[in-house]
Image (cartoon, rainbow, N blue to C red; front, side):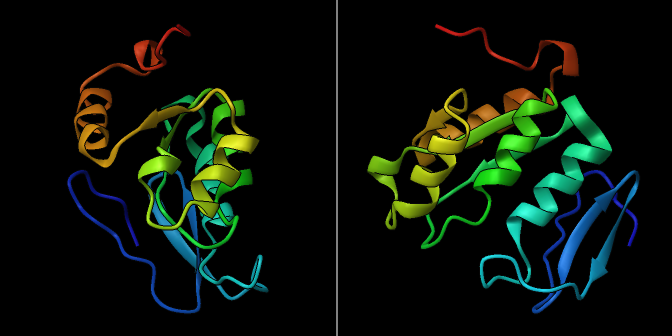
Length: 132
């Protein structure tokens, strides 16, 4: 499936999603942390394909899936965004992501969308916020 700007892609049940340069592919590899699709698989492949142009977002959730993939995005210079665990219905996922990526930006849900809009309009070179 080819990636197109402005298009939302939803992972089908029971397939991992791999992000590759210009398109998405599906795989039936073993579940990761009992999950397929796995956010870790998708985020790591996005980091591999797009490096500093990648953006990962972790929201509320009941396991640690996504934490190591978000760390991969950050390690490759991409942006790591996490819902503030204090505002999450289920804190496990954002807390695990924050532990794996302590440099991630933390937002309430109300502030997350404006940050994503801001990032989408910036060149990759200026996307990272300076540490405060």
